[in-house]
Image (cartoon, rainbow, N blue to C red; front, side, top):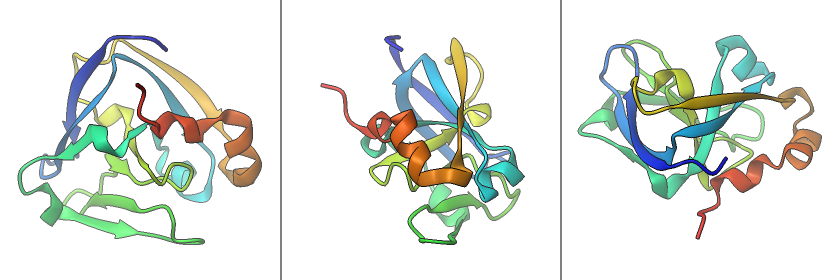
Length: 137
């Protein structure tokens, strides 16, 4: 996906959590079937953590849920409960951005791919998802 890099903005439903992220205007989003993503219907694209920035006092409205290995940090708004981004186990150096939480106007194309989170170890190898949080030079 060699598309133009743009600044996307977005956040949660009540707008208490706001952020900006530099990413392509065309992204690959992962529809994961792990126990957490499946229940939340979370479909996300992954970016290097350095490309993501929380805005204003958003941090005070976030809380975090972890389970299993406690590597993934599932963040969500304390007010409205929306997970607009999180720190994925597959990409500890990255951020997973819920594509439906991006403000309209900057995403030109979203390709949805399946991530078999129920078989996480195999899926990480087969999809190459870990490479999506690497800074491109």
